[in-house]
Length: 254
Image (cartoon, rainbow, N blue to C red; front, side):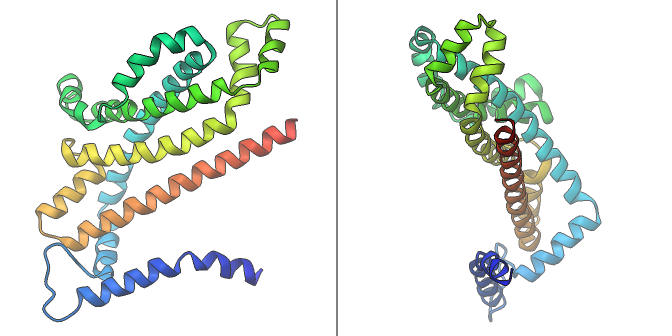
């Protein structure tokens, strides 16, 4: 047990050392920067943001917008990607459209989304959905092409309807690869949500960073950055936990 705990603590060595170096450097003689603050001051600012409720409010907005965009982009990307992967004709017809649309930066859609939705959750979620949609489509298409042909032959022999074929045969065979896509989508959704808030949307964690920067408060700015990193780690850990639970359930059912 002691060995396990020791191994789990090794990963924290580098971050702790970096924080200590930053603390030493920021408190050095003549260091009074508008862009850098000691980690201890950032921690105090983070506690203050918790106390006044701004941290929870900004976190709920960013996570809610990211989750909404992720859900839309993931579902649409997986369904369309599965269709393009299973149908060779559809894959050929859709190839040019996918290759032309996929490289468009999601942030380039911010002005259009603002015209359509204004500020708020819908605008941010639409940009997140666009960013998530394309990698989900490409990964789902690749996963569908790798489904065992014998499973498709079983579906044909059982004369399953297209919906039953999708949900009983194809998607279960794609689950391991879809979870890889989901983890990628989670990271993209959070990054794009914060980027939209920094660029245009006056809500959420990204906007809080901008306010701290404009107020020349580096401690609060670093506190928000640290909190975003913590949220990203927690969300990824949650996705890994769900993946392990689903894999365990599928293994038990087999």
